Image (cartoon, rainbow, N blue to C red; front, side, top):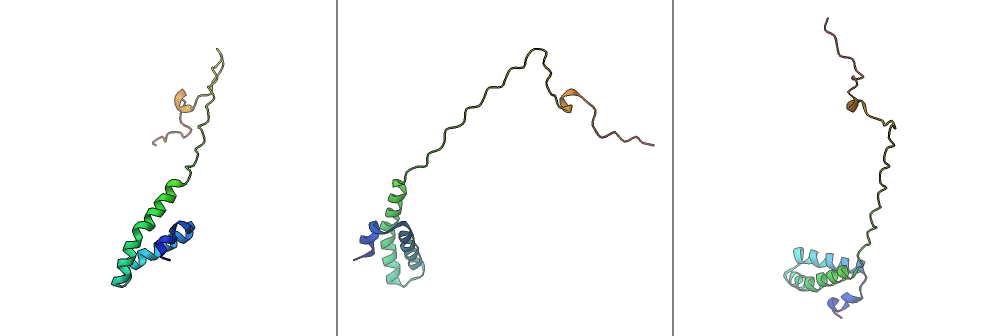
Amino acid sequence: MKIIEMLPGLDDKALATVHANAVRLAEHGTKKQQQDANTALVPIEAEQARREAAKPQPIRPAPRARKPKAAAEPGARTRKSKATTGAASAVPERADH
């Protein structure tokens, strides 16, 4: 039985191994091995693509609803940073002597 006929029955790990071996032989094998490997790469990569397309897409959770900011009561004090209140810096300026 040819390896190409066995592709649908292989698990993902075995298919990845067959692909890696075909790539290796296509690059570093003898002329006959390179020819056979290049011929086998087309159906191997097609099987990998078919499996990838058949995988269910991950479900992304819906974004959380943001709580509306509570309106400030009239006359309520709010916290302001020093930068917005115009307060002096915590580091005193250096006086030249």
